[in-house]
Every structure is written in C-alpha cells, then in structure tokens.
Image (cartoon, rainbow, N blue to C red; front, top):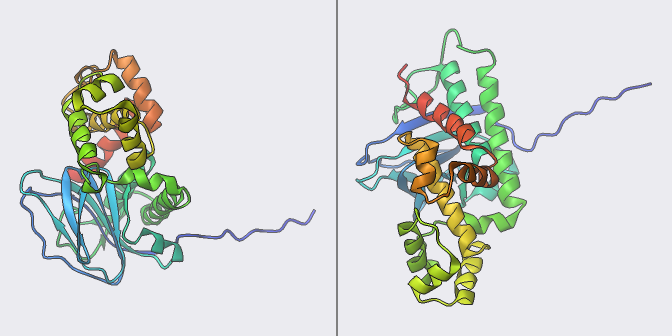
Length: 302
C-alpha cells in the first residue's frame, strides 16, 4: 500500500510575539496610548475599563476581549474606582481571517480563559523580566527556559485562541448579540430599568410574574424586550447573570461554594453546581482552578 502524506493547512499562524503582559493596574492608572504595525488584544480578567480604539471609546467588563488591528490608535482608561486586571498580548499574524476581529467586542469563555492562562504560564517559562511592567517593550529569553517547548506552545495557544473565537463568533453570527454590555442605551429605558432591577435582586429567586409586577410590564412585552436584545427569555438572562456573578465570587476567593450558592439564592449547592456546569461546561471547582492558575501566575514576582 502506498501511503501519501497530507500537508496540514493553517488558518491562523502566529510566528512572532512582541509583548505578553498580565497587568494588575491601579484604579487611577493612565496611559497616553499608542499605535503600531502589529495586532494587540486586551482581555479584562477583573474589573472594568474603557479602551480607545481609533476615535471610539468602548467600555469593557470582565471577560471582554478586543483586538486592535495594526495601525489603530488605542489606549486604556481606568475609572478611578475599580482596579482592573488585564491580559495584553501583541503579535504578528497575516491571516486574512483576522479582519473579522476588527471593531468587535467579544467575550471569552472557559476554553479561551484556559488558553490565556497557558500563554501567561509559558511566557514565564520562556522569558525573564516582569510581565506586569506596562513599559516593557521586548521579551527577553531566559538563558535556560524553565520548561521545554515553551515558546512553541505560546504560538500554539495564541493560534488556538484565535481559531476558537473565530469559530464561535464569526461562523455562528447568532452569538454576536449576546456579547454586548447590558448597560447599552440602544435597548431603551425599559430594558435598562429591568436589567438594573435584576442586578439589584441577584441574590433572590425571581419569577416572570414577580419581574412583571415589580416593573409594571406585561409578560409578552417583557419577553419581547429580552428576545430582541439577547435572543433569550428574561429568566435565562437572569440565570446567566447569576452565573457571571458566581464566577466573580469564585475568583475573589472569599467564599466557599456553599456560601456562593446561598448568596445567589440557589436552593442548594448541588443545584448551583449543576446550573454552573450546564452553562459553563465546567464545575465550579474546575473553573476555580483554571482562573486561579491565571491570577496566581499573574501576581508572582520573578
């Protein structure tokens, strides 16, 4: 039998990285902004920020990621109150598929978060210096890398991150509507009022009837508002909001899972765990481990 080899095609190739950072900013950090001839993404791991992308000022919250195209002026603005943690990576990639990322605000899920964690981990294995120095402009190789193949894995993880995001957002356009921030004024006053109400009652068990009653809104109108804005019903939206809050509480490492379940109004920690895994694909313990690895590596001192 005559076997023939197959040359594997590559959709997104990253051969060069310029910077890899995990920043724990002060709440009043300011940066004058810059532009350069390579790609850069910013992912919010904690808190909130505004970024400038060209002439647009864009709010980002925890889990959001934005890609700045080559030549685009960009800047990071903190709000003076919340100290954010950010993953910032700049790299070269000439794939035509990268054009899809221009001007888009995306949200990372557990798979992408784990990939970001691995990029930070391997960067520490491959390079010396501080990854939390915002003015570091060059990665300096360690004379003796701490782990075999670290640089290659960085490229592999970056390529995998790009592919995962492209598949989820640009091959499944219906995902796009769910990534917008809930505070957007484009959905109208009724939408914003109800979202604020849900945020204020995040620790309670709400029903459609109670939401309608407390917001003087009819059932059909309520569902219409959320299906138009997010493609789901208000209870599904509220459940997603609870899980987002649970992620934040897990990341803060102040409460155990039983206490988190109680704070968010779940009848038991077992029901909370089932809901968490249903929506994230991971148990709370698995999520805590993946996030913790990122935050711990980001706060280590060389």
